[in-house]
Length: 152
Ligand SMILES: [Cu+2]
Image (cartoon, rainbow, N blue to C red; front, side, top):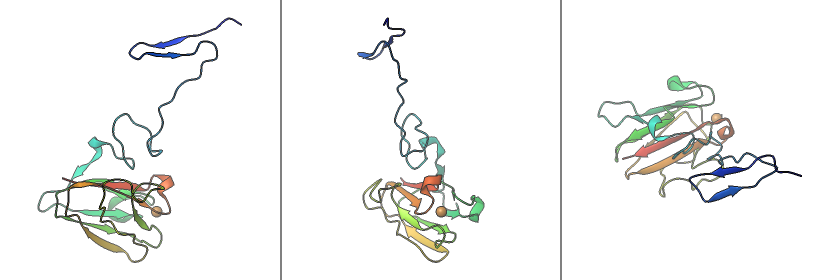
C-alpha cells in the first residue's frame, strides 16, 4: 500500500511515520487544558491576581462565597507577599480544602502551609515563605475546583 501522508516537523529531528497518521497531542497538564507554558491547577502565569498590597483582600471564597461559583474558588489564582495571610471562606464540609494538585497532596512547593480543612466555614493560613502553593477541593477537583497561592 502506498503511503498517503508523511509529516516532517521541520524544527525537530523528528520523523512521524508515513501511512497511517495519528495526530500527536500534547499531554494535558493536570487535565486543565494543557495550555502551552506553565500551568498548575488551572492557573497560568497571567491569571494571577496580585493581592499583596496592604489593604487588598486576601479572601478566597468558594461554593458561592466571595463571587465564586458553586464549584470554584475566587480568586482562583492569587499572588501575595511572604508573611501575609489568606482566608478561605465557604462550607468545608461540602468542599474539603486539601493542599496539592488532584491526586497528589505533595504537588507544588515543599512546605505548603494549607491545612486539610473539612469542617467549619473559614480558615486563615499564614504563608511565611515564597513559593507556589496549589490546593484543591477534595470532592470537586475533577470539576476544576482547584487553585494556587503564589507567595513572592
Ligand atoms: Cu468542592
